[in-house]
Amino acid sequence: MENPTTDYRRFFIEDTNMYNHIVLGNLLPQYLWVPLPRFFQTWLRNYVAAVVLYFISGFLWSFYIYYWKRNVYLPKGSFIYSYFFDKIYLFICLFFYYHNLCFLIDLLLKMVFFFFVLV
Image (tube, rainbow, N blue to C red):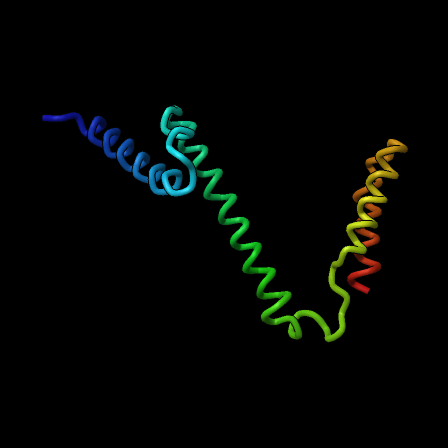
């Protein structure tokens, strides 16, 4: 009679290999993830799945808020983030980095965001 712990371990390894193959096999070439130990394969599987889920949910949220239901969540004629904010952000970061005042970047950017977007 086999040891129940051995059966559980074998089942766990087969199950983990199946999940690794489903996620990593469809997104990465095999020469990148097959030679890795199982621990790193599982970590890579979780990382890749989390990044894919993050970008998909971010895209869907942006599409829903800014395109599909724009007039529900944003008033008509409201100002949305543009290239102007990219220039402001770059200027602020470079200015504070040059003057070694990096701790103020976060505070100032929040104030700029509040003033231009929320008001």
